[in-house]
Image (cartoon, rainbow, N blue to C red; front, side, top):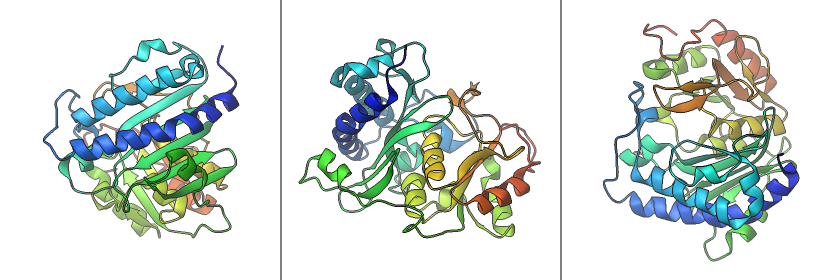
Length: 313
């Protein structure tokens, strides 16, 4: 039986800020060396196939912390992007899932082309995302936090002179009252057609942004209103649900474009090409219902097969 979700949320919010800050420090140090490794299959997407020793090492650390810091975590399932860590110590089944992405944005991290990579986790059920914590180690002077819980979206700079729990609890909060509107939409997952998809979004009256042009981590950019949403082909379930929680808490949603129905996590598929779990089809995500409508109308008839060989969408 899964534990009470509120108890897990409380434990994550207390225990994990220190772990993600430590993980970020390790990531920054390891980034100074040549740590690229092989191991993932070749999906045709450089962003998907990138893998480093940092991904493997950070996941080992985060999984160990979950195993050892509070017994309640062992009663949850773990879904992790990599295979490292004592994953068998956690529940083999149940509705409450802790999902991990040790380094979101591995290609940018590995190639040293930007500082928007992040280490992150979230808690969810088959229907809803309940808690998210994201740390962006190289944004700002000392890193950047995003925490999303049932009653707050908090986002802001880290301060290493203070305990991470104190910093996270004192972060500025964002809501529909103080968050600006943006028409910038993050596009990813369309393989070599990402730029084409971004151009189509721009032609529809928004501002499409392909992965190579992203100025940072989509999660904190979405929370603070610098981006208005995303359009993603078959998003993976380790990082995308954080955007879902942000959008829903701000009055929007994440929906399948072919029917406009809200996404859930009862239906997913194992992408053997990239070795990760994904939601099926194309998903639009935004706090703005009008943006969702525009994205659904635009992409409704695009090919739902992530790996189709044609040049068109």
